Image (cartoon, rainbow, N blue to C red; front, side, top):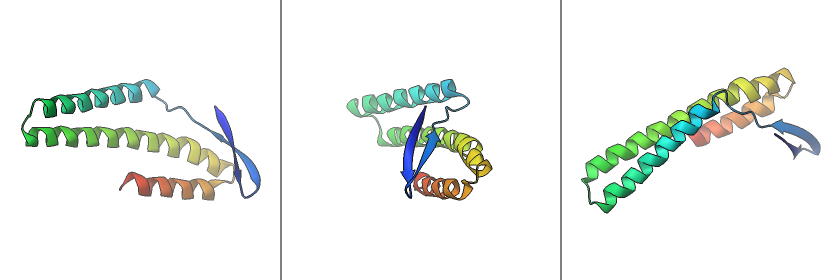
Length: 104
């Protein structure tokens, strides 16, 4: 899939690269979804706060792993491709911006 974006009056095409292992990411996200539902049940059941916090930490770690995999694919795919087509500076700026959001 591709979309057109206007940057500085110039229309550029941006491709949405599908990750190398889309099925792996989907499976990870389904597992995270199940963990979130588990926390909801734990709260409904008045479970021990520390147990809930441990589960929240596990979810955060799992989401970070999904994000890292996507960042890796973006860097190896989109950014590398942009560099090959003399659009590296823009791609690197975008990557730095998304990294700043990712690490918050």
